[in-house]
Amino acid sequence: MNPNNENIIDKQTAIDWTTAWRSQHPNAAKAFLIPAADFVEILNEIGVLDDATAAQAQATANRLEANIRGYLGVDGSTNKMIFVGTEKDKQGIYRDIIDGKIDGKDNQQARTVGSGNTSSGIFDLTTPCPPVCDPDSPLS
Image 1: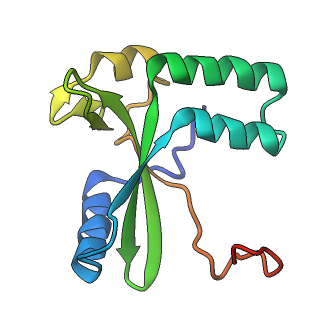
Image 2 (image 1 turned 90 degrees about the horizontal axis):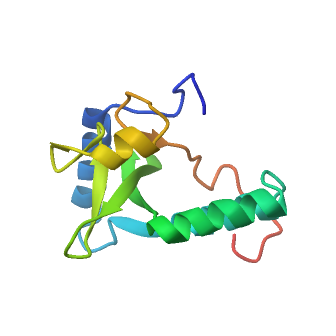
Image 3 (image 1 turned 135 degrees about the horizontal axis):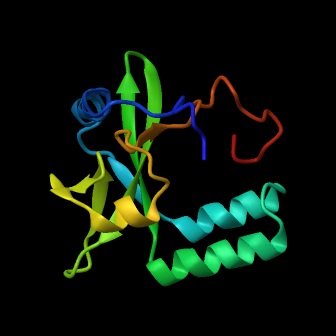
């Protein structure tokens, strides 16, 4: 995995950005739960994963019921999307994995199945559109 941790942000920054979003957009969605298998499909579509690797990764993601939560945030005037892994609890609620923990408790699965990364587990991977839009896309 990425040893540079260049897209990892600390927990307090994530809290600040998401708090600012909720304050500025009190009636808007604050996050989205995204099946990990959907990310695998996208990576396969753009050629990052070949078909066999994607099929295996998708099967694993489905078996684990793996999901990612994308929180909306804002840093000054820049919109952000912050990602964290989740784990489904016994009640069927997907709990955020932050600092290798769920709700402040150690998360055995994150430590044994994950990359061994000792970071916050909070990722800022995005650049908003605009400025990086496809001017010819019907979705822009």
